[in-house]
Image (cartoon, rainbow, N blue to C red):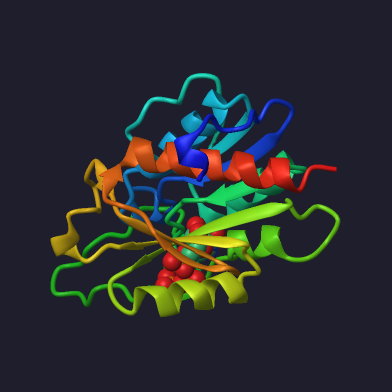
Length: 228
Ligand code: CTP
Ligand code: CA
């Protein structure tokens, strides 16, 4: 197993990573967002850089410093995140750890929405955001050779993870349990199962940095094995 020996170098490889939430504006002072600290995605970017990769990290709004040795593109919305990912291509591998808002407000208000005395609350019409992972993983000349997604689930984890792997044309899905009682969301540890075409691998509960290092080593091994 790669985690037992030294991982191959990623020197000369370019890896794209997304991390953090996206913010979808309602008006100049309000937005819709997902819960995400960005810790796991940022740790993955740092671990890949530690193995020698050139890393482009496309990050939504997070309260974390930019990882050292990584090119960081700061974005706010899902549409901006998709555009930044497309601009970053080509890449040998891509890891989609961001918690992208599935919907955005159809019509962003230019001015702050105001309460009117006795008035009814505004109704927000939502439209779907692009699926960034599915867009980058779609077959084509720009598709990275190894595409990895995440699946944060509260129930039927493996079924949903394998469904996402196939539907989005990802090679691997890192599945984790985000029920509040798991303590994963916002915490420093993660417990994941790696879902690939070959099957499911359960990893022990580890520090998010250790999960990142193990994943980076797996990516390095996979790219080395398919090198031409
Ligand atoms: N993802 C993405 N762009 C989106 C939505 C999701 O790139 N608009 C990526 C995430 O970064 C993650 C994977 O797709 O790697 C799965 O995200 P998730 O939210 O679990 O899947 P969804 O397809 O949005 O399904 P749902 O939220 O209904 O579970
Ligand atoms: Ca989603």
